[in-house]
Length: 117
Length: 113
Image 1 (tube, chains in turn orange, green):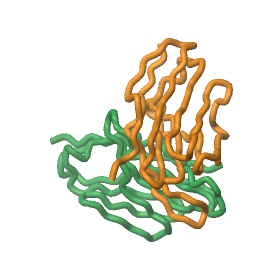
Image 2: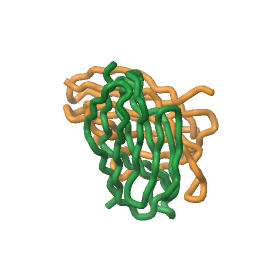
Image 3: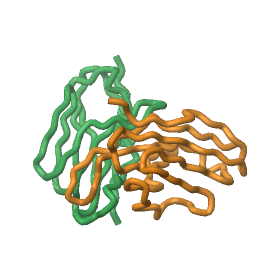
Image 4: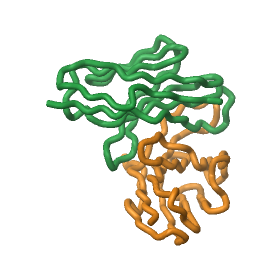
């Protein structure tokens, strides 16, 4: 079974530039997450989609970050304009979570490593 | 506020020297506690899910246990290939509609031959 696919794996940009990351979840997984992991820390949730609707984006810096999941499958996370503190790994994850009564395991992709200089 | 704290931050072991990693949590209604392994340059790899106090799960040299306040990841006779960062996360709120994980900062394990 194919895992969560992400691209690009590595990106270096200058501050104030823009960048976009793409994610393809595990087939059949309705729930998709974007996490940010700063070096030396655990991942932090940015946004969660259930199919193509947003469930939780409370920690997404909406002045510069945006995400979409058209057609309920692939997703794109965009940062514009980037700041130095956005240097991190952006992890996409997916699960079969459908609500509080369902069990789920969250599976992660390899991550997209962003360096802002 | 839901919180996860892992200790120690870093652990160095000799090959064959058993030890334990700790994950303490405060959460409003635990749905599940997850352990992940993360190798440098890779995403977290799922290891275990524990759902209730007293539950234990094993995989090769790893054994995870759960109490009402903490979880332990026991590593028996570790090998150099067990070197990685181990992440603990909780899924909080029996009525939560998000299923999101709240992570600790991780324990970086180095096993020397």
